[in-house]
Length: 165
View 1 (spheres, rainbow, N blue to C red):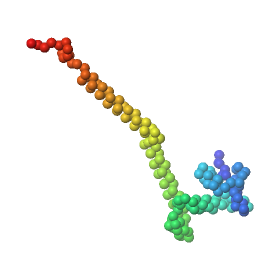
View 2: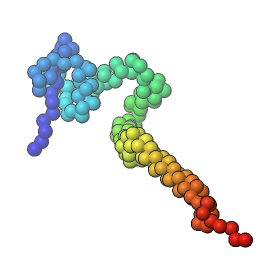
View 3: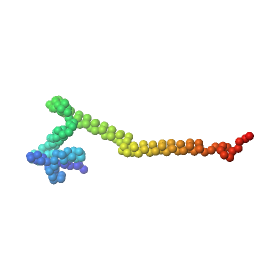
View 4: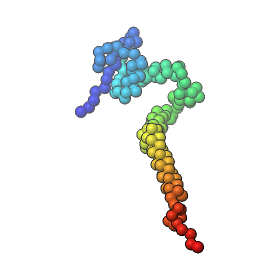
């Protein structure tokens, strides 16, 4: 069964209307749809034109203005230079594949780190604590056995023995 895309209508007053929940939403709520991997399109309410890219670019632009930007002026300049270039059609798919490789490597790294750490740092600490306790107990038992041998009199020595004369 094919899943229908969620349709967001953009009105001339710049308001965004989510047809699935029958309510107006904000750009931040559209950003949350992206984070939740929701399949959606933003369409002009009158013409039906697909405005998804421009709305996503607006979200990126707003987040680039806040905090620490991901896209440096040099990177943005290089992207602009590709517009009109004979390789323009290759740039988008190349960037998509490069980002997917990066995400795959990040996922693999996290998986390896989780298996190395046993899911949580607490498991590692618990294992270390158990090994230290076992080593401490073995050391104490060894000391007790050694002490018992030193204190215990050997046969033929002590009070009841007679000296040959």
